[in-house]
Amino acid sequence: MTALKSSKEQLIQEIRDLKAQRQALILAHYYEEGDIQDIADVVGDSLYMAQEGQRAKEPVLLVAGVVFMAESAKILSPEKTVLLPDPQAGCSLVDHSPYDKYLAWRQKHPEALAVTYVNSSALVKSITDVTCTSSNAEKIIQSIPPERKILFGPDRNLGRYLAKKLGREMELWPGACEVHVLFSARKLFELKTQHPEAPVLAHPECDEVILESADVVGSTSRLLKEVKENPARTFIVATESGIFHQMQKARPEAQLIQAPAEGSCACNECPYMKMNSLEKIRNALRDLQPQVELPPELIAQAQLPLQRMMDITAGRSPEPWPTQFSPVSV
Ligand code: 13P
Ligand code: SF4
Image (cartoon, rainbow, N blue to C red; front, side):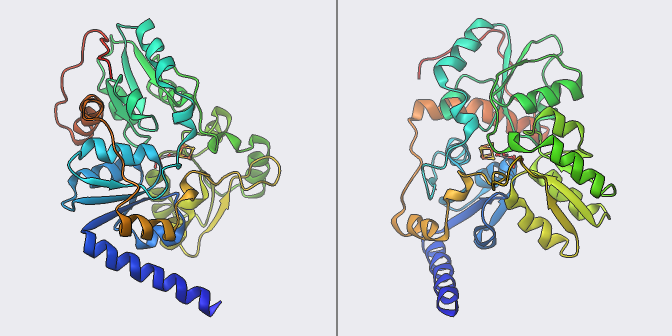
């Protein structure tokens, strides 16, 4: 145990030294393991990671997250070296939205504007008008002229939730997050009966029936804010378990109950986020590999929707909306 502890401490020291040597900034998502969140310079939701990556002065960004987050960092800062400790760290929403099929969908509705969740590939972003995250999605949808038809993808649950909340009709792509769709409505109902005083917090990637039972629906940062500010002593949380680390730090006395899935699996863990480790982070900083590499034309095309999102979020005027979809080959 002592030997194990000291090797972990040694690893953390190596990461600190390499980070300084490489002038690197470590950005970690809330779903990463606690040890990774603790060594990061920036811990946040996907929007905050993108904003801080773009603002960073450091020439090297290490993204402790998944591929789409590292690609967004590279697209927004092409001049920086972007490291991703495990390039296999994908996302089921990316897998559910292959470029060819997404392109065919867009071509079927050339008059529509496409709002695409950042949980998508760089190629899909290149045929998108504006991206969004779960924390700015409402603002992004509201910035679109009411007469314009909207295609929203690839997360159907987030899309349905937004359409209902904002009273805005949208054509939805049928993708879903393999982690968030596993929460059981039956077990959640039982939990609520046992803890009637506990607010239910859910990420909008959850199924509609879970969102309908929730008191607060929001991004990871929104759910964390609720735990910090709501005086309740017990919370039921329907999102990936990594977020418990910051929630528990903020409210050590609070009881946080994970919304359960059917059966007894640990399916509330994102297998992609959990591919990162302290060893892989040390190796990436030591070797300056694996790096995110994208063709310059793809970066240029995918930058437009990401930058529109950043501008709308910050209250700046975005590039004007196109009147028709006209794909450029990538
Ligand atoms: P947030 O933007 O809310 O952090 O969500 C990212 C994500 O991948 C959720 O599954
Ligand atoms: Fe993708 Fe779901 Fe994992 Fe988030 S939790 S990265 S949406 S698979």
